[in-house]
Length: 367
Image 1 (tube, helix red, strand yellow):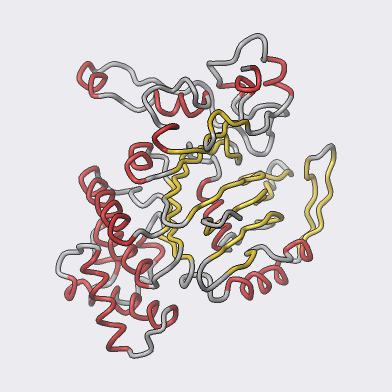
Image 2 (image 1 turned 90 degrees about the horizontal axis):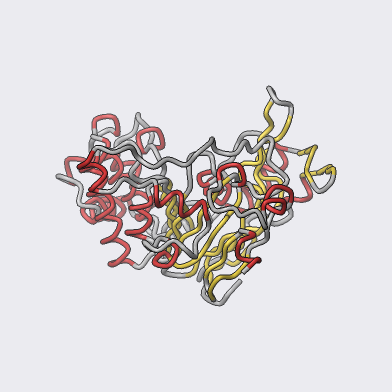
């Protein structure tokens, strides 16, 4: 890991078995990501590209079999320095054919006990998570304030319940929830979607984590509330300088909040680098998939003229039956005849287009 790196994911593989197809869905298939202290790394891509599975893998919250089967997740903070997937190979046996994993034998109960030991003192205390649906993530039978107070008592040095209550109210105020003392005694289902999301953010921050994972924090909210949540996250980033892994399919949210961006598709990272470089209006030096995502964003003029939106042709790649070549091959508009055979039959490695910008595309090897 670099000196400034807090989280480094290497060759993460998280698979699920499809009973209907009798094969493995490779949700995360060799994911490499690195998050530096104080930065916000945005992960963007269509639904099914592996963004949320990657986040849940970091937290050890993937429960469907076989789940995480290999990789390294290095965490380095002031209090902890460890590989969160240490010794997972002891619980998994893989069989492969032509480099492709075709069988997994896993001691799931032993693996889960091992992960619980490794992640003890990490979940919540070092890495906190804001989930997509806060009403499902919070206990519906416990008051919001009580849940935040318990989180503080379990994951911080605070041991006095009265002090923990005051810290809970402090964080509810920090996320600018309406009437914090009133909301403290509300149940999650009595709050609006926006209020519940603010309460979820308050709970995540109250544990004073080294890394915050925000998984689709604006999903399911109306446009006005989405804007307020994005502004809130921007203010918290500016005021607290917390290291954040931000996941979203909304490119505008990623562009507003992120320092660096990783673009995922078909369980792979296809591009990674500075946000202002990857999400720039000039897309000549970006991956064809990134360019297609940006081009699909409606412009003000398109809305005024009521013209058709620009869509990406075809469907998201099936992670059960992945092609041998580039995963974006069937939908790519920038492929040339000179590289067509390579694109179809051989997956490209990541190539560097600038010191901090990498792209997985044969076009850059040609250049």
